[in-house]
Image (cartoon, rainbow, N blue to C red; front, side, top):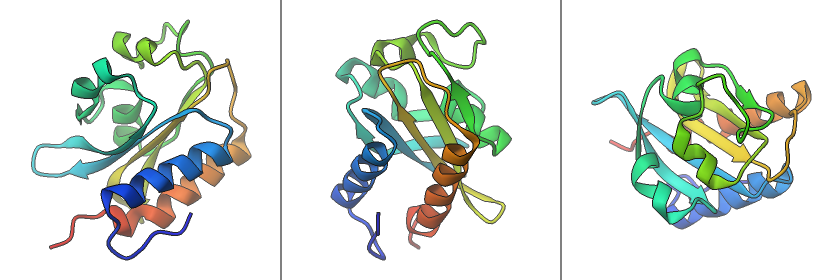
Length: 149
């Protein structure tokens, strides 16, 4: 899951495909944090239904699974997104047909760079080791996700 210094959109898509495959997942999203409007902007996606694309292009901090992961700077997991009643997942998220889902913040030290999310078709509880591994993968990608000035 190596990234070049200035990843192209295709590089990010390949990164996301590799991460999802490593965890046995079928969906994924990678968002870049935009401090100008405090939103997460979609950088790459894997198997997200077309009708959800307008919704996930720009996510406010604190909204949905990715937004909460960004806000808390902690992993956010749902064993079964389809039956979850916590209110974390937005109603439209169920259209992904994903059950087990995990989103983590992409951090450069304490600086929020974005979020990385993966999902499985079946109900699934991610282990502590899996959460830590995804956090490490996200941290390794953080500098590449920062906007180039």
